[in-house]
Image (cartoon, rainbow, N blue to C red; front, side, top):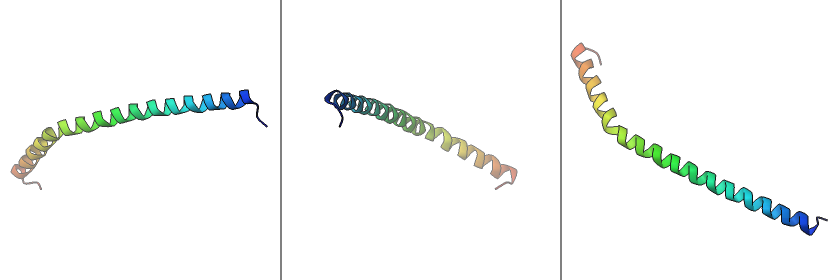
Amino acid sequence: MASLRDIQRRIKSVKNTQQITKAMKMVSAAKLRRAQEDITAARPYAEKMEELVKGMAGRCGGE
């Protein structure tokens, strides 16, 4: 059977792991939010580029 000291050490280890996991989740959430904001900001540019390419393709006889 595990001693009291072993159990306390294990509890501390699990708490540390939980803290690290929580920090990793927060970092990944921030990165995801930043990526979504970047995509939203780039959308007008991408739409304009698509419009320009379609216009050029139409003038060149392409589809």
